[in-house]
Length: 274
Image (cartoon, rainbow, N blue to C red):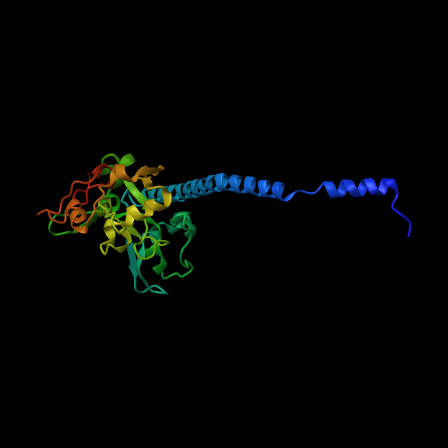
C-alpha cells in the first residue's frame, strides 16, 4: 500500500484540527442556553399579547353585532337567555349568543382567544352557549330590576348614561373550569375574593377577576358604543379577602341591595338609565 502524499497528509491534518474542543462545545451550549432563557419569555409575552389582540377583535365583533340588533329592535338591548320548548331540538336557556347569531354567524367569536373554543359548539340546542368566555353584562347593560320586587325590564340603549363607559360584554372565567366562562355577568363581579379565588362558591363575584387573569389582570371589554379595549381590573373592581367582605361590597347586606361599585363601568341594576 502506498503512503499518503504530502497533499493528502496536509488535508487530513486540516480536517482533524477543524473540530470543536470539549471546552468550545460547552461554551457554545452555554451561550445557546442563555439566549434561550432571554428569548423564550419574550416570545411568551408576544404570544400572550397576540391572544389579547385576537380577543379584542372577537369582543369588538360581538359588540358590533349587539349594535345591529339594537337597530332592528327599536334600540332595546337583547336579553341574556332564550328558551323555546317547541323548537327541534328544544332550546332551554340558551345564552345571549342565540339573539346575535343572525348578525355574527360565527360561533368562534364568543370565546376568549387566550383559551380558545373550549367546548363543542355544533349543537343547535345551544346549551354550549351558557359556557362562552365572552359574557353579557346582564343587569347593567342588558336589563334592570325594580328594587324589592325584582321585576326585570330590558334597557333602551340610548336612554342609558355614559354608554361609551358602560361595559356591555366582558371576558369571564369559571371557578371550577377556567377554560370556560358564562353567558352573563353582573356588577357583583366588581367585588371578587382574591384569597383562593377558584374555590369561591358564589361565582358571580369571581367571573371578571378570573377572566382577567388570562390577560395580565386586565378585563377585556366591549362597551355600550361597541368600542373595545382592555381595562385594568383594579380600576373597576374592589378586591376582597373574604366572601363576607365581597358580599358586603356587592350590596348583599344593604336593606335595598344597593352597592358602592363603579357604576359608570358596571351600570346600576336597579335603575334603567344609570
